[in-house]
Length: 369
Image (cartoon, rainbow, N blue to C red; front, side, top):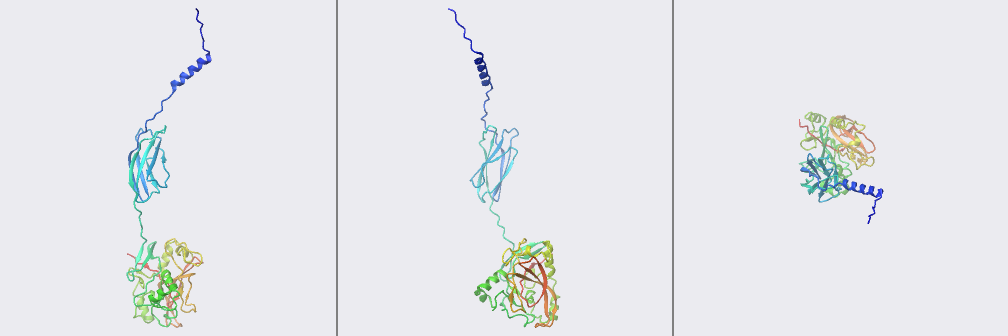
């Protein structure tokens, strides 16, 4: 019997050959984890941790994957390219122990087991504001450094022992060369007990400080009783401590000029950067230097409105004498320089007022030279 030959069609033969070739080209996918990072170190800070590591010379990592516990609001995982060998993670909680895991990932998305490191973030650094503690009464004042000067950032509120606040009708107009202390709108005057019982006056005292006549501001001694003895007293100092605490003094007009130079301003433009950001009737200041000028108002001796100006104006005494004024109710009335400023304007100008006016005081620290 003769067998019949069966011949496969050419198309089928070609398909078989193609399939055979494809099977020969099939690659085996690498499932080996990539090499780990080396020398992983964590450096903690306040609310942050800086990680640093090395990669082996022949690393097959295509990506660095960072995770940590406990989790917080920082998005995870953090994915980096192999060019990174350090990374700082911010937004962490203070005083918290974190465990960081760095995994390498290769092009086949194989992940290494991971290298871990633990770090405890630091406690927050609490920076106490610079303060002046007046040892005479224990009162604390904020202070600020501007240029080469250190200033009180609040108005002085010191009342010497044995003294009371004068009422609005009592002053050195009728009692020449005497010290007087006022509180804005404390019309009747009185001691601290009376002041504390007057809600409005107490608030003004706490916020605006004391308004001193110039004799009180310069700390006039009891033996100064006329113009000649005042002249002699003023020759005894180059820096006037006045009513300020030890180590501090009543600033001169020139020292206020230095303040303006330090902030790059002049008498026409120095107000806003020094004024407080609240408390004014209009146009609050920017307080760029923490100086916090407030609308202290004044006790004006020759006005029917004995206390006036707040919350629109503020005034500060200087230690600089101007001249004697005759023909007033106070024989030989001394005039001295002051600085004045306004909510509605940007100036920080100087003027001269009678010594009987009640104005606020800022002290400046003595030079350490």
